[in-house]
Image (tube, rainbow, N blue to C red; front, top):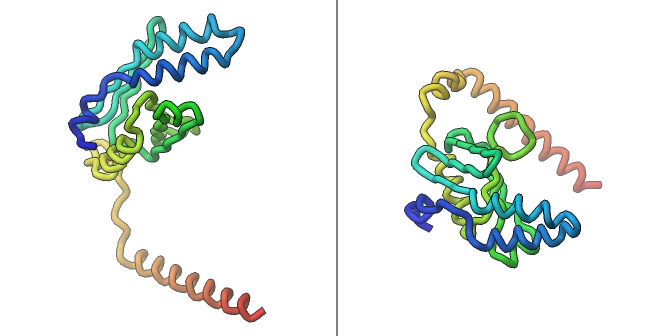
Length: 170
């Protein structure tokens, strides 16, 4: 998928509304409460993908907006349940180094999940650090430390090989 198509994504797929209806039906007696919440979430959910990062907003009474720059993204997870796979959907969970176990942003209702995940990975890896993050970036490791770490790595590899040989003899 080309970048222009990803940059043009503004709303979730209509398939997401179908998923929300199924989830509301599975809530049984809570349907009258669950469905309106999910319905308004679907109709107010907006995405923006640009050169700097991702923005997601939703909500009618309680509005929420999440903005992430590509340089802050640490990991991306793609999850999909049975009904989501049937509808051609998946959740893309974007994590940052915020210290929270939860994903900072969950992109849902996108039918081109694999392509979007690959796009985010490429942007995450190719993101240029901002001035603030460049100032706090770790200093380069001096030569003696690199040599020492290489020696330690080599010794560990030799020890592992020796242990494997002993295990094979027994």
